[in-house]
Length: 138
Image 1 (cartoon, one colour):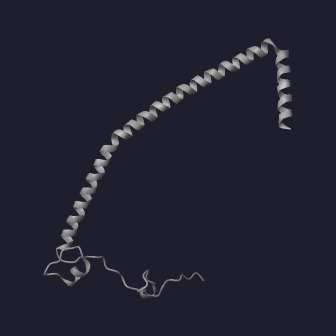
Image 2: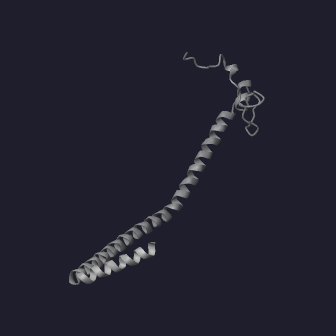
Image 3: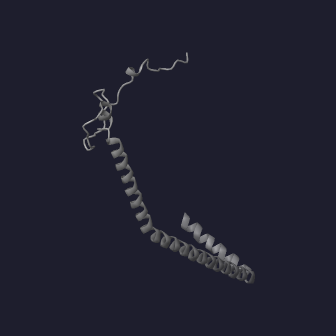
């Protein structure tokens, strides 16, 4: 009952290409030598191609590493300046938040003082304001 559908052999597996052939890498740019073995020619282009390809790959990696280092060095001052700007903006935001909190606290205390001094007037004003809001929302 718990059978899996595994292909019987590797030849049963469909190839991703339409002509069912494995494509070899392009070796036209690799150097060729007179004493090339069939395996080396088929895979790398020549006997000396492997060391040449490794050397080419190493030099390309070193060049890419140097380029990335240059980009990182040139971007470092901009990143540092951006960080300083963000820190300054954060400090300003905290200062404004504290200022607004103090202003709100002062207004609440002012309203408390007014309500305690004139309770009937405050209740009448609250009733009138509620009536206006009710009239508007209908």
